[in-house]
Amino acid sequence: MIHHFEKGTDPASPTLLLLHGTGGSERDLAGVGRMISGGSNLLGVRGNVSENGMARFFRRLAEGVFDEEDLVFRTRELNEFIAEAAERYGFDRSRVAAVGYSNGANIAASLLFHLPDSLQGAVLFHPMVPRRGIPLPDLSGTPIFIGAGRNDPLCPPAESEELAELLAGAGADVRLHWENNGHQLSRSEVLQAASWFRETF
Image (cartoon, rainbow, N blue to C red):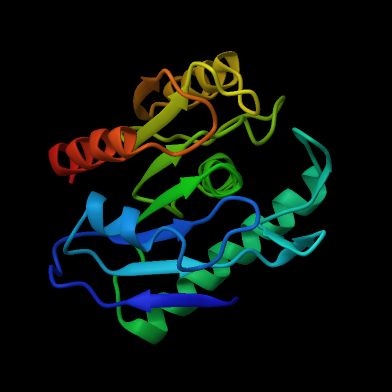
């Protein structure tokens, strides 16, 4: 997968897996990653799917309607890539936390839904529920921060609340933070995530 790796200065900090929104790139969230954890390794990944020339992490059938078969395939593909990157760059595979926005947050949530040992924790900005009607694995103690907008037209508040409930129901330690904004990623929610990250890791 097309990616960008930056070596961190603090070996005790988890590596941050940076996952962009639709149309983004592997470098989009580098600044956000540094705000959240200044000493971490950064592994930014570009989605392997193209939608009208825009990079995404999995296909969708319509706005808000995911291609579930492709979602599962791409989730496993990303998980395999993280393992390859850990070997290549020499970081601890068991200490990887995702930072995802929009489509990137959805694939990060899918990792949690399908592959419970894939992430040590996650920061999910404006995520949706990746799949419904499936049993979730045991996520006991997995720390997850969800940043959501009360006026988000693409990801309604009920969506964020449902995802938080599903993850908490699987045992995850979920913090749901609200902004009075739309779908854009705001500086204040990144700062809230950074504060949470310092407390948690």
